Length: 480
Image 1 (cartoon, helix red, strand yellow):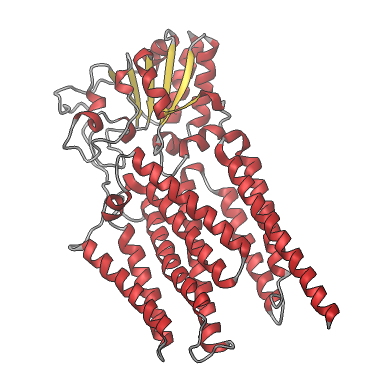
Image 2: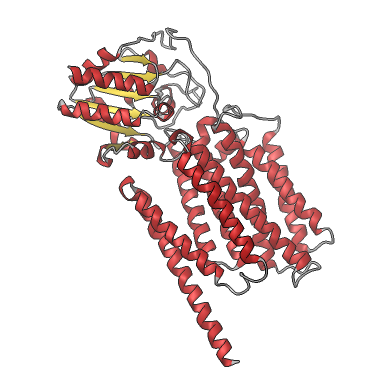
């Protein structure tokens, strides 16, 4: 008997040690994600940590009993069969959609685990009949609510990013009241379950349904311009729900990993909201977005008109400049123009032109979207400048090349108090001596508002596919 007890303690010590190693690798891997040069290595380190956590979980008593090994193998096989091809084949322009979708899968998995724990506690396990320990019940119900909200909200975010759903806000009369009622239903039903009732299944399904509707209703009114913040927020929700599941399952690695994701997602959400000069509650209450087109040559609000240019003229301006700043946006991602931009940068540097990149925190459709694209094209990290660092340099910039960055360069954020984006920090490209904007058309950005920059006296527009336009400019630069 003593031998068995000692063996059990040694095995538990081994499991605990593996968990400590696993979440230590999580934290170290996350710290490596702060820069493009170390991000790939950091991702691999975190993946090793997850593999160790899986092994530690499999060593837990009772995990591999009965048919569990076959079910675990089936789950791993299905996940691998779906996940690897999806990750390998996804385009960089579709990465935000993939992030939203995979994040939703995490939230959905947490909700399903909560359902399994409910069945084990109330119907099948040693506490059948309603005596479910509160230390397991409370975190499981929290995970069910938050996980469901994250799953359905992420699906709506995916639909908006994929343009299956309109990017503009979809609101109902009394939207905030409806959301409050749904949240109250989830909370009250959870309390009733904790208090004990004979209709446990009905109440648990009520929680899942109310949380599902709430997830849809929370994200539908949010416009496309706020989507980077929403993705980050839903990611934090998934992390918190996973941590709650870890508490219910007494799984150390899941608690730590969930809290890391929840905390980092929450911090990132707050930073991005500040970058847009908006509060998270204001974004949840309903953002702005949509697509509003303006005709080419139309007059701006200040009476200016759009002036178009050619690749040859742009090449001349860039070649004789001392400092050129490139401000990328979602248009660069859509055109897959990052490699062409890198070639243009090299051609200009060969002529002695200093080139820098201006990176706005919410440029693109997800946090760090532009950094990922430029890192893929091997753009040196020291050429990337964050908004606060590059803004003071625009006054000495000879030419700023704006590639599909509509909303984050819109001077209405500074000059028009009535604008929906008024107060949002922007890339102050209008202070440059000359501005060249690369666009397909005069369609607005995700915020759905016109950009006075396009009608400014120092601005010229080069219309067409960004990749083709940049390649044409590069050819002209090399020919000079």
